[in-house]
Length: 304
Ligand code: CP
Image (cartoon, rainbow, N blue to C red; front, side, top):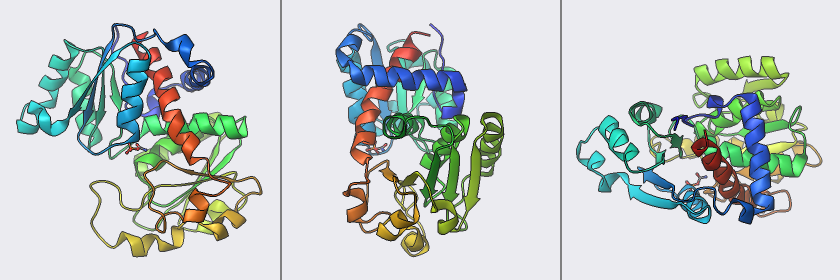
């Protein structure tokens, strides 16, 4: 078996990403047809940070396709007592067919993936959240149809979720616009690569601190928490206050704008209650699609 990893959306070619999104739609339409796809397969899920959606959707995805999930917290592994990531990757590869990891630095994922001989999936790192992006793109296809030319305004911290949306959106020809406060822009290497992807696909990328510039006429409004796990330093709430998604921002966007959030949400901070709970919101479909898209991902990776 190959050990094709999924550490970033940019690990997939454009064709692979499109094909995976088609598979995710097929899983959702007929989940019973996928009930045996992971029969006798074992998947380890390691969480070094808290999780609701990733933890539950991966475990349910594995078991509902006939496989078995072993869910572990980082501090209950010998990893928490100094065993190396490399040794952990080598040993787990002797027991399981894939490893899903939620951790801090991308380097931790890369070290584990380099040593493992089975696929390693990024269940969120400080750099990227590719599984969330798959579910987001699946949701956009459901709500908006063709993704090419679709304008998505991401408002807030240029973080892991923003990085993955930049890669995925520009790869598929979208008009991706980020409004981030100064000092909270996406990583330069992500900007550079997304510019390349946009040039190849006919997409666009805009990075600004001007909310109006990013949001005007947008088809999609997307936000994430202002204080991500492990980033509790500084007075982020004051800095991010002008970037709250609420009724005025929705009015500034396109007439048929939809509102997205990867969750968990903090109502009254990055998004108002009437925005996340209102008629424009598609956040519950996004959360549901974590399950379907991850089923498609696991089946694809384990059949390489
Ligand atoms: N969106 C997301 O990854 O949710 P969890 O942190 O609950 O897994």
